[in-house]
Length: 164
Image 1 (cartoon, one colour):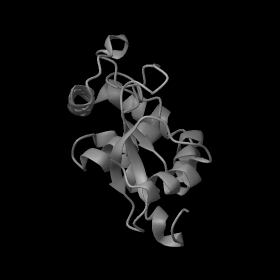
Image 2 (tube, helix red, strand yellow):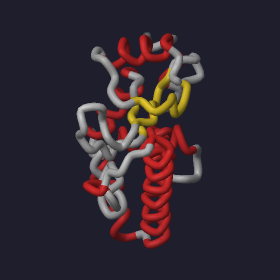
Image 3 (spheres, one colour):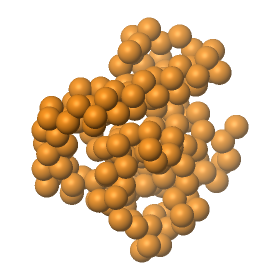
């Protein structure tokens, strides 16, 4: 059961009612949730592959700036040139799928529509830095090398105070 205060904070962060929350995936150093772990099927029945959903508007805004600045293209180019990075990124994809499968099992959900599909472009593309950062926050540094890079580029987004 998720704490109602967390649901209220997440709703304020998103500007809408959150859907399919399984648990708080990570808390910002300010104490507020910044990533939610979602169930792979939303309450309305829609399959939802984004297991780690970044909710902090300050972090999300900074990531949007990174995306607009060409960081995704640079990372994508490196994936094609650096086999070690590509191997680690594929492993991050597998960890993502394993976590989602565990959540589905715990919730008694079967979601064949998204089997083998993670998010953020993994395992071969870079298409959403928000997802990569969410995974790095929720599963910890060392799981997704590009997610770790996004967190490094973000810096201390929480230092301006709580986001809600």
